[in-house]
Image (cartoon, rainbow, N blue to C red; front, side):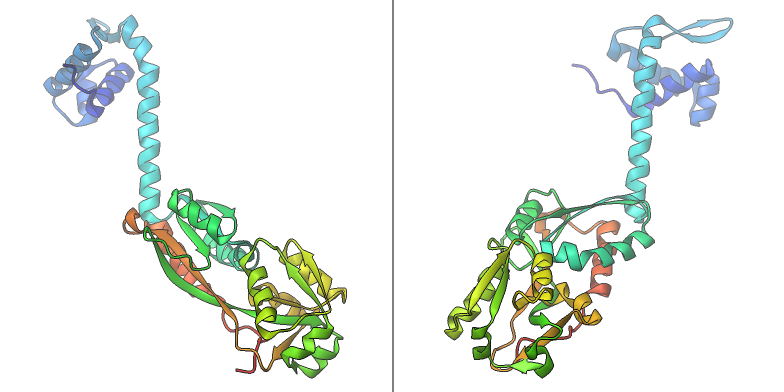
Length: 309
């Protein structure tokens, strides 16, 4: 039965090969000469070949030893790199962080958070995977991302931590009569074209269900495949839209879009959570630092509401 090759054997082999002296290698490794000799003898038994020969010039590699040396050097270098990587992760100064995020989050919320985090952790490699919340959940379950930012989808293997609430905000062109009033009733929307985005998203179904439940049939619909296109459609006076509040902050702030309160509609807010597998243990320093960044930069109250409540 063979014995596994030990790290100490490889270190002794590399030191003797470089210094051409067992005594010098022992001094460098801070062990006794007999200990170094025992390590080399164990390595030779495992490999079935002598690795060194002694001469008046010192301890020299055999042909087998010369063949082994580059492999040992690469192995020791890889282990040293791994140790540095682990130390960086433990210290929070390096490593890699992969995040999954639903489209509205990755586009309108996550960039500012990543900017702050990267400024504090410049050596951490960041990777973002986008997808609908169902897809983000699968990424978390398959451990392809450390964290998922998504709407709540319960799963026994995943913990969900509330991050922020994103209200649906009715936005209209800046010179629209609704914008001048600042508030309307739900029935007044029946005369308008409604801009809907991404039929595959839960926002599309949520918006559609609001009108179905109110018994309102808007004058027409325009469907687009993303939020940015929906905003441009509203700016071009092609209709009005109920959009996630975080996605329209810039346009409302610049005056390109106007928020309108719907006085007879209950507030509609989407909860956004951080998803993480339950069985991965305590978060690493990098993950913990990013969670603190999320907590510190979570979106605050937004201008524009969907009801008078």
